[in-house]
Image 1 (cartoon, rainbow, N blue to C red):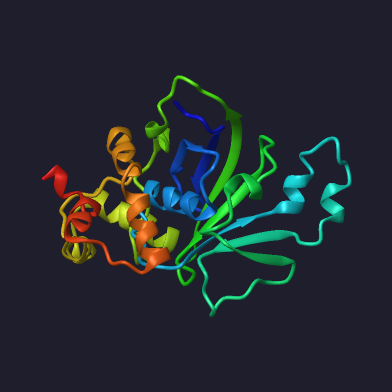
Image 2: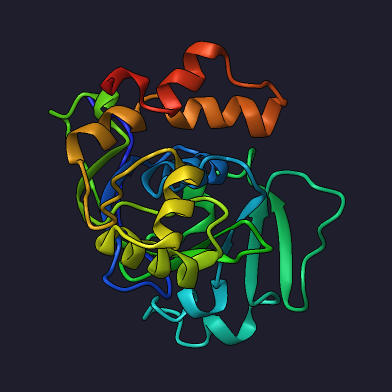
Length: 239
């Protein structure tokens, strides 16, 4: 049974059309880092770059009607969660925390409508906006079923393609399936087909049970994926 409260979120890839979105559920006791790995899994981010989660605590505090001035008295505007990295420093109005030890439920107040953002690959600037929809309990749901995605649309990102603009160009080239750009992209990706509107719910729920663990070992312990894990990440099980 799911002994922890279940947090249900809606996520959307920023600056890309048509929308790539996910509605998903996670147990309330996960760390912010694990939430990041879940989001990265759902958006095909391959753990090749640094990432962080930011929570606009002042804006979120305004959702608490019992504390009308809460947003104005908080010292920090944004809380930033990342894996310990000496090269990065919080910006003005930010406080930085270790994502691997800070619990998600401590970063959010539990009000529907609260926001947070995933930032991935700082050079390219991928962003996923995340909104808390509800917190619920389901005593009948086996805990092993979480995390899970309930619905979604769109494939996700392609690493190192140049951000949202590059992804839109990639989608157009694979729709046309002709010309030099198509040949170059086809050779680069090692595939003849790429449908960025596709989303396989069953496959994604399978991946959510395994990929976040692989990313935990990589980011938090510096352990390179095993051959078996690499095969899973590359979807060799589908071939």
